[in-house]
Image 1 (cartoon, one colour):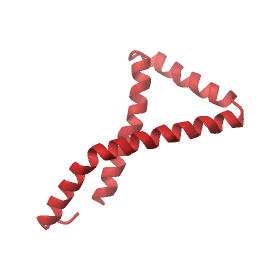
Image 2 (cartoon, rainbow, N blue to C red):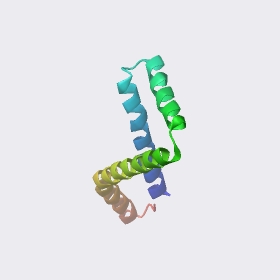
Image 3 (spheres, rainbow, N blue to C red):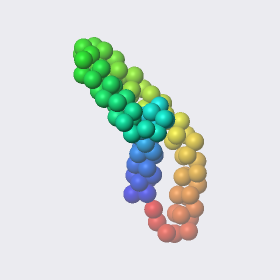
Length: 92
């Protein structure tokens, strides 16, 4: 359960980074933020199936790379904390 919570937190953090990128692009203005999202959505809907598939494939690739980097950076700290907890007999 601890591991599932840790993974869920990392996944939510990565998804939050996507929102943060759009906020930075919009310079913190809510109207501009939603205009960017609307532009992305309308271009996605107007694209043919091949371009949609390419976009989705690239999006998944970027997500997986970022996930691997985050898990690689945060993993050792989590493992050491989990081992310490198990050694102290508190369960995980």
